[in-house]
Length: 73
Image (cartoon, rainbow, N blue to C red; front, side):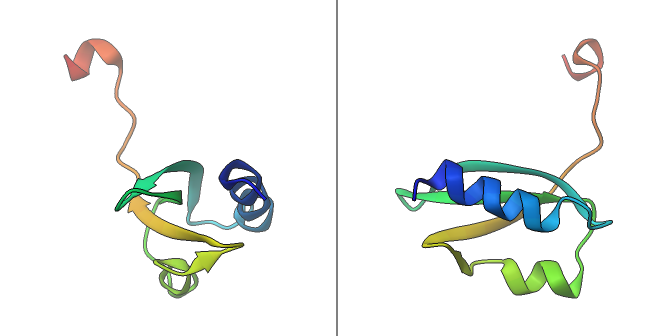
């Protein structure tokens, strides 16, 4: 299973949770990982942080509020 496929499975599992924002993929210490973006920390989220999900580590990051590009520059 690829990291993208594993991320898709995690997305299907958590997409309805109130703390969920998005799922992505990246690298952590040179290894493919799943990045889970959340609105807030929750006990369920803490249980996923650094845990392997279908063979890939999960990195939980708090999503910041979106900004218009003109405001960010």
